[in-house]
Length: 541
Image (tube, rainbow, N blue to C red; front, side, top):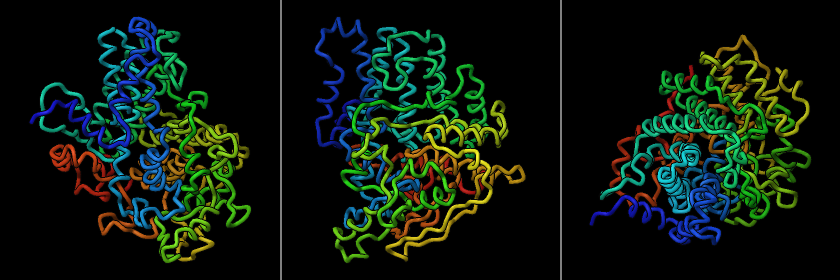
């Protein structure tokens, strides 16, 4: 039997959840506030209402366990930011490369679900065309790129240009990542062109905007900065196109996000999932790589990001990713839990006993300055001076955290990352992998300069492990400690580390031909050791 693309997609994504996705979709897009169709259209609720689930599902707020599987038990750990103190799945799980199908599908299932990103973007775009409201289409395109670049940067090929096509098909075809990125740039072109013609005081979108309160110039800045991020992302695999797109972002009169009051932070008003993992479930702690760098640098932001540990009083103490947690206690996970939860929790921002944030951070001004610093190293017109941008990135991050001592920090040419010492299990100890310092040195070659830029960028982007993991894969920086135990059966090299997640089980079971064809778009087998299109081995220059 042939199915329409829409039926296939609803089947694919509906089966992946424990709730009724179809009911969610209907609730979000039919009479959301109990008003008549005429009132809804007049107040733009029919076209504005679907934005809420887009905002809420780029990084899912609720339920928290969805987010834990969408981000925390993969990218947050692979990035060197966090590590679980618990031996999930009897100690063999994705964090130590014993990949779990059910876990590894959520980075896919959340944005493709019937209350997620893609379906609601399509609803908005159709209504925008019908009602001649291009502002809504433009903003939906920007959010679509923000959401879906995170998905392709996990899996590689994804369903993108073929999503929602009319007609009958036997399966839904994937796009190669290179094609997806080309479409990202085209969609940002379209969105910025539309928004550049709209008055900044246009109030049509204000009621639905969870980031900028309807301020159109801020959205243009975000779109330009997002373009610069994606241009830098492809700079090794396609330097010519990267330069074109990067310079387009740098020269756009709408500007870039360069101050913290323009940070792209979703104000969802709900409990941040990290607060639940951190305080209620005790499922997340500081990673040893974070300890090595923050403590080694005597970074004042460290105690803002993390709390002092109880295992070594008065210090920040992380734990190695990929530890054989059950081995130490012969399978007694209760004893293990009582030991490792004493390591450093996330900071007060994510502590339920304090006043935790309800905001989701997806792009900050400090990142822009580091992007410009790298663009300057690559000789892109309009990027400015690498050192100036680098130091502005640090200063902007310090301001975001209201941390003192940035002048001394920026000029520090002595401190380096520290060796890691596990006070409970000496076999987890490891020497520091880098001797990179903080202070800029014009005598350094570009590779050393880039390591400094990316290391500071990595600190500044916390806690967005997805972006941090992507930048680590692209550049090799910062140098993150490898897993203690590798349960991949040889598919992932311990030193090279995990490069992607395999195509999701939910998609393999409902769109098998699409997945089978998508495998040919990869550089290797469909496993976590295969590099993405933009992930090119070797030096960065």
